[in-house]
Length: 279
Image: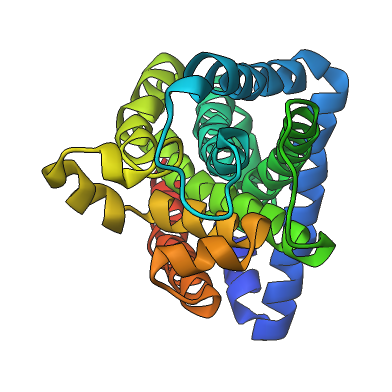
């Protein structure tokens, strides 16, 4: 963006600036979604890893997991909500990778030279990845049904559960955006993305009940936001019996989940925009 354009933008009423940012964000969202149409292998390989996780955990580890909470009935019903959360978080790493790729190709410099909102590039990328995550979570639902998973508390709760997983992925996309813009190197971003994701996803209740973990690890896992999100999603999918076993009400779980998502967005949206302006 040129200095004159920036000055003109800042002189606009705030409502006009918001509308301007939304319009530019939608244009760039469309641009990023069209990449999946033109390069379908990007979407195909985004779905391979989650499907492999479902099948491996369902058939390799499923028979060894004991001590399931009330309402689960089978390990696959306990597993899939955790897989939804894990899939959304892992999928969010593509935001940083995509931005690093755009930086390397010079397209970000071209965007900055245009009269576009400074937040539009990031909003367009994270929103496009939200839609991609929605597609992948829906695919995981289909795969889950094929291997025995069932939503046990109605259609509305199922929609709420899927929406929660997608919102988690959206929040983590902003973390990934900050990492991708800060590191810049495509290979380094790909390597760094999983360094911080693996501890929070696997040291949680996403795949196994906390009771089987060492005491020191339980303390971390119990307060891990991934555990809170997985428990909330299970509350939506498994119903009242599971909610009672968590020691929280459904409302408390929803509030905790929403608070973590809001906190991540409150921190990393401005951080990502600030880092973008400095690139």
